[in-house]
Length: 597
Image 1 (spheres, helix red, strand yellow):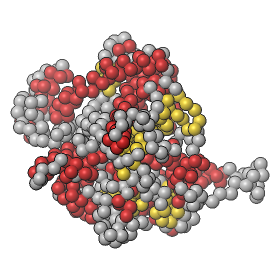
Image 2: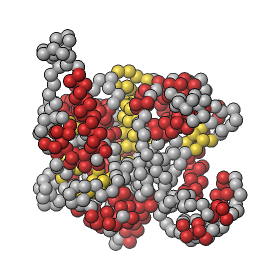
Image 3: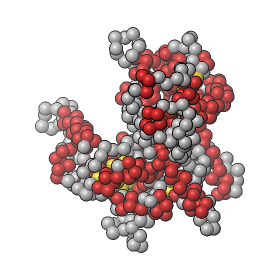
Image 4: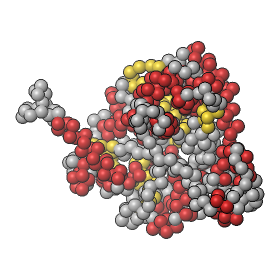
C-alpha cells in the first residue's frame, strides 16, 4: 500500500507543478504561452524480482520479498541440486540442459541460480510460511500488483517473466487471453517440467494468467485510481517492467551489440545479443527481453551505490562535522587526490553477495591492504574503484559470451562485431565526475552520457507514448526521444595502471576469500552455499548446537576464534547471549543514490 500511496502522491505532485506554472492569467502563464496539457497514458517500472503474495481478494498476505532479499539462498541451491539429480537419473541419462532447458539462462546451466529470482523466493514462502502459501491466490511481482491497483487487471510483464521467472518471454505472450493460448496450452512458455521436479506445480496456478509485452496497454484507470491520482477515468496504463530493462529503452540500447550500464543502489550491465545463446559467467540471454523481438544478456553487481552510501554514512559518524553527513562532493574531491590503486588498498565490492560473473549469495565485502597511513579518502576511492573492477569483470564476461555465441553460430572466431567499446551509462553514478572517469579508466571503455540520464524514467515515457499511439513503435519513439550528450574517454596511462591492479590483485582477492566468507556464513547462521546438511561437531556449546543444527561442521567456534583473532574459549556469558544469528543472511534494505550526488 505504501508503494501505491507514494505513486499517487508523486503523480499529483507532478501535475501540481504544471498547474502552478500556468500563472494568473486566463490565457496561460505570464508570457502568454498556454500550458494546457493532456495526459494520454502512464507507465510504471519497478524493482525485480520483488515478490508479492495476494489473497483471493488481491490483498497482500505478507510483506513483499524485495529484490535484494537473499533469504532463499538455500532454495536457490536446492533447485540446481534437484535438477542435476533428475538429469543424472533420467533414462537415457541427460545433461542438465537437455532435462531442463530453461536453466540455460543461469550461466548456460552451470548455475548457480540467484536467490533474488522468483522461483527460489516462491519455494521459500512455501517451505517457511505454508499458511501464506496455501492462502495465496496470486504470486506475482509488485509491478503486477501496482498495475492491478491502477486498472483492476492482473497481468504479468513478459520482460519480468523472461528475465527472473525462467519463462520464455516470447512463448508466454501467446497466452493472450484468460483461458490460455491459442493452442489451448495455458502454461505455454513456463518451465512446467522443472516445477514438477521441484514439487512446485501449484506455482503455475498462482501466477497471473495473462502476460503483456512492455508497451502494450494493460487497461484504463479505474474510478478509484483516477481519483487517487488526479487523472481522468480511463487514462491508459501501459505495461512496463523491471526498472533496469525499462532503462535500456530510455537509453536507446535496443540493437544487437549495444551495451548499457544502469547504476543506482546496484549496477546492471545489459547487452542486446543477436540470438538467445548463453555462456558461463552471465545471465541470459533471455528470449523476448526487453521487447518480444529481442534477446538480452546481463551481468550484475548487488551492492554498488548502496555500498558507496553506506561508506559515506559510516565515515560521517566520525567526520568531526557536528553530526552532519559528509557530502559526496567533498569525498570526491578528497579521493581525487589519491593515486590510482589507493597506495596499496583494494576493496571487494560484494557487500551484499555477488551476481555475476560469479553468482554467490554468501559473498561479502573486503578491504585488503589497510595500513595506519590510509585515510578516509583512500577508503572512499578504494570502494569506488572496486565497483568499477566488478563492472569490468561483468562486461568482459558478457562480451566473451557474445563472442563465443557468434563463433558457434557462424563458425568464426567470434571477435568481429561482438565487442563494444562504448557503454551508455545512466543513474546515480553519472552525477559524480570522478566515478564516471574511474568507470572509463578501469574498464578501458568509452562511456556515453545521454541528455536525459534517467533511463528508467524516459523509458517509461517512451513505452507510454507507444501505448498512447503517439509513436508507432518503440524504435520510432527511441529515435525521436533519446539524445546523446557527451563522451567520457579512458585515459591510456591511467588504464595501464589499473590493468595491472585488476589482473594481479582484484581478480585474486575474490577466490582468495570465498572459503572464508562461506565459513563465516555457517558460524553466524547464514545459509550454506550448497544447501547440504553437515554433522554438528567441534567446540560449539550445547546452546549453539540446538540453535544452529547441522551448520557447524568443521567451522565451529574454534575456527571463528582463530579467524577473528579472539579467544577460542566460549565462556558462560557468551553462551547466555540472546539469539542474534538467524537461519538467513542479514538483508540490507535498498537505498537510492541518485538524489544524493
